[in-house]
Length: 402
Ligand code: ASP
Image (tube, rainbow, N blue to C red; front, side, top):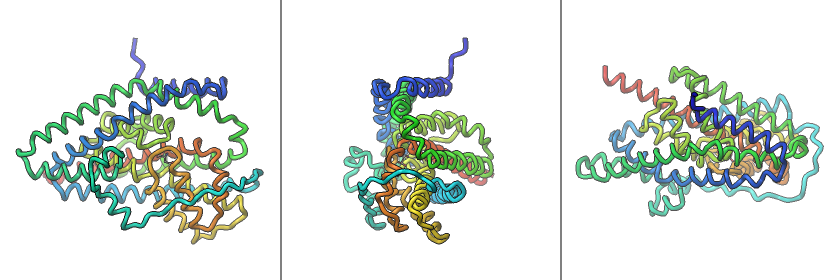
């Protein structure tokens, strides 16, 4: 008899979780520890995995120019696709007007606007003053910086640093192995994460905001299907169907955990094993993406601002909507890859267009449901960048070889 593949097992767990969650209701909460167990298991891999694999990736490339070029391409791809996501969100929100005719009352709880750190401070903060503290705090950008430097210095030192290189190479292999082992319990984890959410959110909670939920879901799916199919097909000549199938396990885990940082080990594993991306590319593009590339979040922020404006009866001009594209793109870069972070950064976008922060309470009630789809798209977007950057690197190598 054929063994059932992991993807099928995850899908089955997903469907069972929805049914059981809906039937049992809030008391299905008892299975939540299964989800937490899985989440903790993937989270403990992240820091050593990113550090070791990026050091090895950079040290084996040994070419600072190439790394700089890869960084430039990755960053440009991330920015462009994110801006596109906001535009798709705004178009749908303008067409379907999810905030018009809404019959809910606002509570007077006023949220605090997110602090906007200065650009210079943000950039300076990428450089760790104590790399060990960065590892302890899991500060991803600082870890990336540290790993880049370690890798470059190891490459420059050659034989003298061979032992350290071998150490990181071994550590990276070990972390990949652990990720593979942890993936085996993904179906149980997905069940433990999804069932309590379905049990907790009855239809009565979702119904008043169903239009908003549908617009965010439709926008996210449309963005993934249109934009990623287009980029992987035209730039990487990669079949979109193969792409979506290959990244589906990570997308489903992202959907269940609402954390792109938490999903990172699985995203890395899927892009390497299923999409044929090299360790060199994935170890650089994906940790960066899990930290700064949030297409789903940006789209959601665009839709929510319009939703709130419509609810308050405020008309946002074309110029104001252009400002939303800019601010939501920046806000999504600043959003951490953890559950609920997008809602906090939404305060920044709301304030930028002069809407009252109380309106945030409207979205907060269903935010977890919106977080699931946006995180899924965030992770899929990172993987699409890995495929695209890999193709560009391959083309350059081909050119050098001829
Ligand atoms: N949960 C999202 C993520 O991890 C961030 C957000 O809240 O939008 O990608």
